[in-house]
Image (tube, rainbow, N blue to C red; front, side):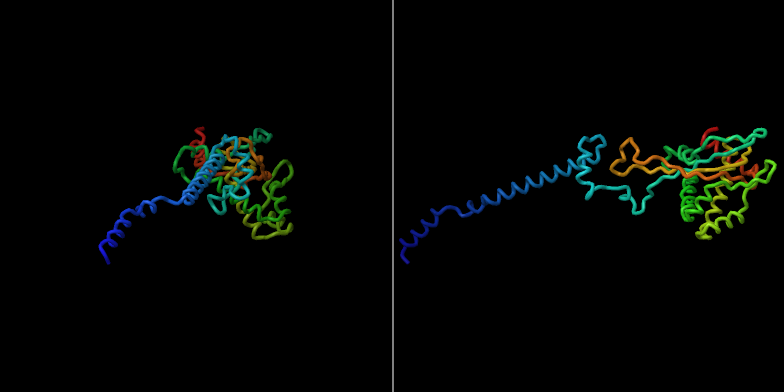
Length: 275
């Protein structure tokens, strides 16, 4: 090959444009795709922030609208914190009677569960004893609900019988069990219920005697059912469900609480109420 031909080729190669500069500029189409992707991402983030803010800020004016639109698919409920969360709080309230002369005096209702919880408020790790009647109310209702409808009607009535001449006595456990058997349902469920009923009679008599400082002759109790608002309405001041009560009839303790038991409950009442 001649020198002229070689020089010509070299000159042509040196005068050609730099291929690397062209490769460094992105194509017009890829720039457009990146801009669209950035816009979509920004819209998603802004939408998430808007929805999250509407759900978490109690006074947000957009919350009802957003909740209505997203609730069927994305709403949270209280059971997000546990698979089988309790939906109703139950408090045990007692009422007692004592004698003043020949007259029976009836007390007001006393919410023992609320007294226990009030004493534990502000304590990071309260004693489990502060849930004594709360747990008792749950266990009692479980046994009550295991009865048949006719049996439940009977146990909500009084367990006191008249002896004549103004004297009264508690209906015996055997007689109560026979009555419940005659109404159908499970005998085992009736036995479990009567055992817990007997326990609550003794508790109400001891607590009532210490609380009112009177020799209690009769007791009864009721269960207050408090269902909190749904998760989406947890900040609402208006209740979705009103308080309801299951009231049980009067019971007469077979024996009065001993002085030792009363002294223990005197200390409990003083610790809880400062009385």
